Length: 238
Image (cartoon, rainbow, N blue to C red):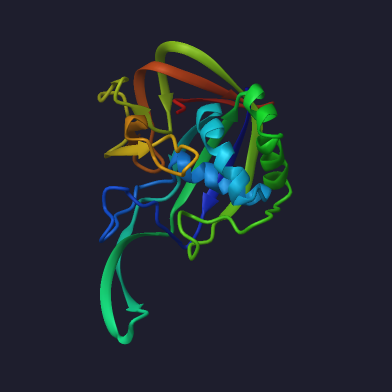
């Protein structure tokens, strides 16, 4: 499968956990569903067309994330004014990521790119040339994202075996604590699929374990290899 590796970063970010509506908390890193939305923004796909593309891209894309910076979160308070009384105010708080920065590997099955009119190919072209039709964001519109091309190559499904990765692994993997050099491990349950009404399907959440920024995990289980002209790396992709 064709794949692209890029860096995604910004001053602020918020990837809302669906179960925290009143005082929203954020996932630690960009989710697959947020990445699909970002691809739509970069390639200029209008909302109604993206509605049909979302399920196909969620199923047809594979992605992995490496933390480039330590995760820093802040609680911000916002005051919303009600239309019925501009003097009546209701403070709300939300969790914000401070200077999020990720290296993201994205691969796409050829058949899905054809079904969606070459969205993934156009995304790769846009990232290479530092272009975007709409402003890409880190979860919400007042958190713009900077995208920087890293490399392109091919992803190969290696089946099961021992591997080491800078990205996340799933709860189905057997983690080698002794030989992993990460001083800390993070745990997340992230959405991987939205239907054509932009709803995250509860059955399609995945629990993952990820290493500290700059560290790696050694594990046993399903993995992929990303190869470019000059190097290769091992990842678990969702």
